[in-house]
Length: 453
Image (cartoon, rainbow, N blue to C red):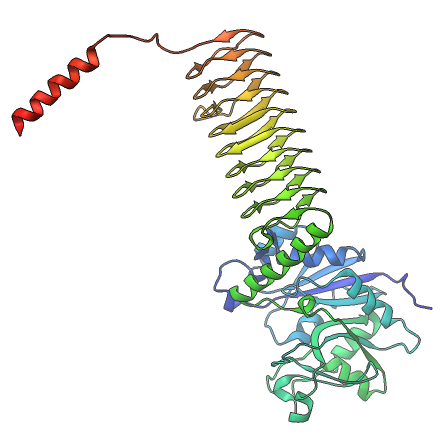
């Protein structure tokens, strides 16, 4: 019976300099789907409820502290003498810990919780392996380290640079991820040397040390190569984004949404999409978006931090910014921007408007070119538009201001005072009519032009 009740510690290696990224930002903080890559890993690891989370860091420690806060204990590796040396730095942080240690990599963000659990479960199988290694079989084994194994039991681990031609022919590769009982880990690490091509302390050598002592090590294999793909360059980051988006698009369609041109739709890590939602081409979801059933998101719209209610229509060419809430049946049309505002049930803003720091009542109509003037240069102010109000085209509502229920604001008005329920408000200069003036003007200008020619 597997001893799955033992506590778990996650040791995450993130001390690499990331020089190939050509960036001042720490490598593991580069985003995938709008979220730092290490956060994807932490979410998966979090499903196993680790008692300790330890991150081995080098350059950029301050950035990781700012991102992670107290969610992980940061341990410095200096100098950096290899992966085995990196894990060894966690010994003090794990003093007195009696459980299982998962060794993960901050730049390998897509390892699933189920794979991590499979590694822990294998660690507690009846044959009691000293070390469990996560392996995979890529189409092209490249320069990955090799796992030489029989029936899942490891005979030898070897880095590519130290491998013979026969060993390089093996397709079972080492992901670098391991599971080890804490009481064995640091004893094995203490016996690892640097007699290799790099002159470093290789983590994989704990398997060879255990084997030399007569102990078994085992390999668990993942069929999903994307799960263990590391990210070391901008190109690999882009590839990871592509893979993530492809998987998310498929999931959205499996869950009942229609994507007219799937490859042109981009989701964020936390996008929530309901059933019978239609998403047209070239739509981008930033973080914090929820879309309810039967909504339609038309082409070239950008949504971030927005809540879209049932049967709502958005776009084309609409922008929903953080705090936008569109209630059931509302419509936001082309070139309309909504920020920190609620558009009530059945209300419409069909074209060319900015609605910011506002509430729009149910059934209200916002005419083309309407803006809520919410900023006075120092402070933001709110506009409240009552239910069934009609705001004429090209109106400016100068906040703070309230527009009453069933009221009408005439087109071209600049409203700076409250409008009562049922009232018509017209704020514009009286039209001046001069019959025949235009004809006389044109005649005079034509004569001047003829004389000049």
